[in-house]
Length: 301
Image (cartoon, rainbow, N blue to C red; front, top):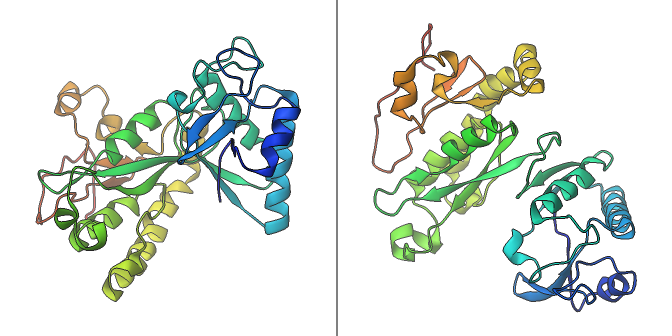
């Protein structure tokens, strides 16, 4: 379930929040600041106020218990979506500290997992970090997801999730396909890549294409269970991740002293743990590719 710390101006909770002073203030530091969220005026919860933090946590916990919600997706803007020159209850607070603090609030919820779209310095909080895939205009390729996921892993965020395809607004509907979707082939390429991430989420459902796509999804699900889950459940990998190592690893991970591999800047391959090498085809109309194979004995699957 998608949730956010924004309270719309016309909602029942807005008046109560203003009365109890649990919203971020405007530039003057006295009046509740308003900002634009999804096309409407809204206030944003001041996570640094004790009553605001407690109220929000109780609402989330109650919602999950009543409706048996197992996972939340925390969605909110970056600092440009805050009121102009925001004033927090905590005088030394910053937008980055806000991101860290609200992630910590979700960590304290009972029996609920969560996905955080934006975060800062919250490596100690176990949550999924979504990574979007961009659609290239010139070569009709999938870009961005692997390199971003690898970077996050090296920064200390091992639990990354392939989060669907972001359609480039500069590409017309005719270029992108029927109903503004990627082509069938490019969608299959995304599935082949995403199913080998630690986690994935559809932005476009498989049944929006044809029955054959659904069969492909079933086959990829079986492959994922046999390969990715097996590797992630490996006790050695779990121990390494608990000590700060990523799940998705760059190909130089097995031979970090080889400077020539670093210089190659390979951003379209990755390792899951130390035993699963993934080299997906990411462009439409392409049926073969070059693959860098790290040292060791590898079996083609």
